[in-house]
Image (cartoon, rainbow, N blue to C red; front, side, top):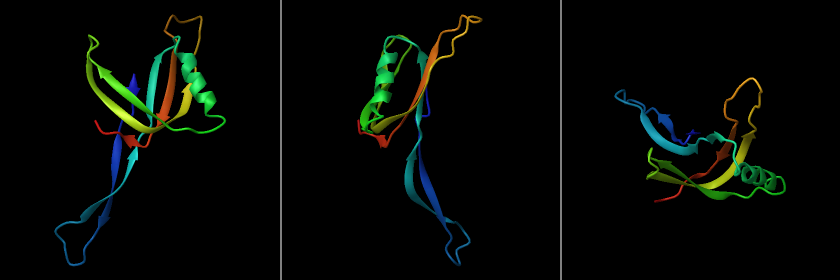
Length: 116
């Protein structure tokens, strides 16, 4: 699963003296939410761990693509992100009491969307 793919424009409200009809709403900065992924543990999980461990020496931002697929695997849309860094990873919980799939979660931060 993928959640948190969002951005928000901060709005600054300014009242104008003598104008009682409305309050000016001026666009300010843009903030981007962190994106969280949850998936079953698989052979690619080691790549995520390496990405995180490589960050210990030096933070290096990269780009990323998130693609939404239809149920039959056709590409629906793609979002391209810039300035991506990993910020959180959590190993799955293992239990002999449950036959649930082992799920890992990881989270990325980014600086925004790339065009097209």
